[in-house]
Image (cartoon, rainbow, N blue to C red; front, top):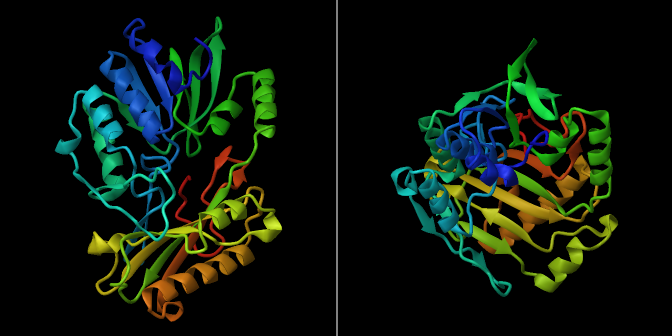
Length: 346
């Protein structure tokens, strides 16, 4: 088997010889998914996660009495989650419920799907998958980073791990990359392999970035739906904007989620928590000025829609940029401009 087999090779491993030790790098949803399947097939599986909790991008942000999710809070195909639990010999309904929440979108594109919300948010999804994987014998080792591999006879034989200042070697018959592709491919055991993958990444076309805001208000917004697409300029204007040059970045469309409508415990009493996602032009550079400009525009439009004065009601604010590459960690990184960082890998 090649070094760092990705999840697409999982089906072959289900039918391979049993009893091997598989190391999964990263306790993302994909990493947990792969680990659970491999363990159920009879393999010994260890998941190494460099952060102190599981979930990858499906993390939470808890600060000043507010609780946010930094990943999408909904999905379009709940049957896929049900299928995963069924394949692993469990039932999603034993762990959490879900309900359909159609967003308030003044103008919807053709083929628009309804949205499904897991009760307890994606944190509950992560917790449930984590427990199911553990029930099949998967071992999770947190705050421990995989720093490289060693091969013997064309196959992976050892994995190097580091926890704080301690380093160790672990036997591994195979390694599954549950981390970002960029991170995994940079850990290829030979210089030739790393250079080949880095050259491939340099030719990739960058997708639009996403600017996220996590906002706490000292008032409620009773006139708004829990989830709204602000597309008042229209979808044609939005498509033109995200294809524009960075110097012409605008905010024609953004997504607003008010999780406290469904779960008031996500904010102090009488307060509201808002999550806003703004798509940005590919290639645009992150900056404090850009974040401030976009936030002002977004809040102005929410004020207009709600009929409430909001600028003076902001008591908590954090932002993150999904799309800036962090070369030191070989991943896409939560990158706040102001305020202390929750240290979340996005």
